[in-house]
Length: 303
Length: 275
Image (cartoon, rainbow over all chains, first blue to last red; front, side):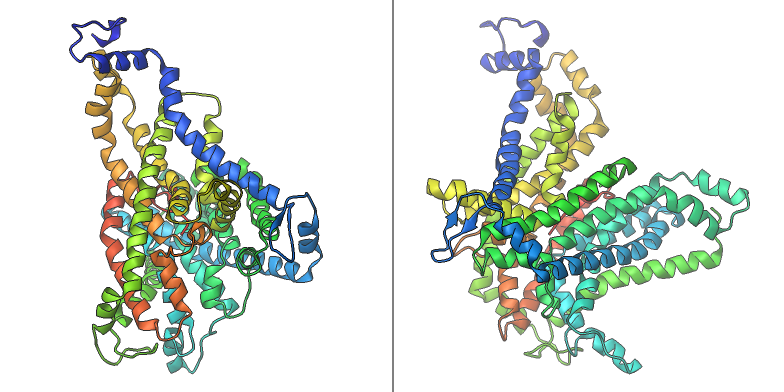
């Protein structure tokens, strides 16, 4: 028996693997250490360490002649960001876009998720809807970006649809950015809301109806309060992803700039890594503050 | 809740409209890839397969696909190893720091890609470059693996929690050691979750552009980078369209398969994440 092979003997049928096996069996802490060493190295040293170096780099500066890094701590980058009016405008615009995208996605996601979770009776159709919503997540970010460009471009598909009505689409610009980002992040909102609605017991809805509430009243007073954590979970994605996006705005935004463009341009064109690192702390701060604020609602378990 | 026929119809219509909203632009891309016009025009007037042929024989596209496959394979292998190690540790052991660890695993996709990208960029610049390791395919794989771990981790963790430990305990009681138990009991139970996690990790890496931009070096161009770079070049429209359509079609089967194999495609982190 493996349990009592305290000393491996020559008669042990598997020889040395069995002794290793027995040793591991008797030492769960060694097993745990074996499992955790490599992943911890990767996530803590490589990833968290990188984040730490980035925070450190935000206090460095660059030599304006050679472009090389000067590693003397300075608040210069933060001063640049706080004093530059353009940065305030871009930050406000980016947060505004994130809010608009979040609201649009909530409005679109709730009816669809409710349909799938509570109205459709067949399990197969329910799954089909969930899969249909999830599939485009994998369609490729740039493929969808390209698709959005064909929609919004001058004489594109939206113009073609609106033409018979005598209207014209908004073209490339701010509206196209909001619409495209809402399009991209919609599945991130539908899935948590669907999961939240699926957990909501039907008996609550029946009780509400038995007590005389109309469908609309039940939705407002029973369903909506119960899916708030799911809506928050979805909004973490829509918000965080919008704050970090610089590509869609290049494809469909015309000359519009978002916060992540500030980061991107300073790494690439301007070759000012310290300023970019300081700018990157803005989305981190917003996301972390948001995560801390919503921690009590139980939203984090819905991610 | 008793839902009136009317409310049911309205909900159904809204849902159908949202699904059309999701799929219509993708269908347009596929249809337009057969459009004979040399510049963008809609609706298509005549049919051609010229752009598909051109895309398939384009050297840039081929090199980019090869680079993407290499990067995604490398990242998937690392993510499979590390993701399953953490999933086993979190589901089978209690230890100090277990909750923070689960949080750190999710962080690379919860934070915007540009943050992960620039963080890795600055640390590679500070640590790897002085060591003589320059930006290239290797650093791209390091970056991709970091955010792919979570996909494997979440798929496997869900499966491990669902299957419980009773079969493993039975195997041990019957005299199997840890290795044999893993080979004969644990692994067969989690195999499909691992395949699902691997497929999704591969798809995630194949599609990624932000972290790639910040971690790749000269001469390295993944397929998303190729698409992005060519979007702003003249006369490349039809070929991009064909490549985009091909990516769409190529990814339908594996992703659908992965979702069927994972446990309930109801959570974002289980089935998907940041581009």
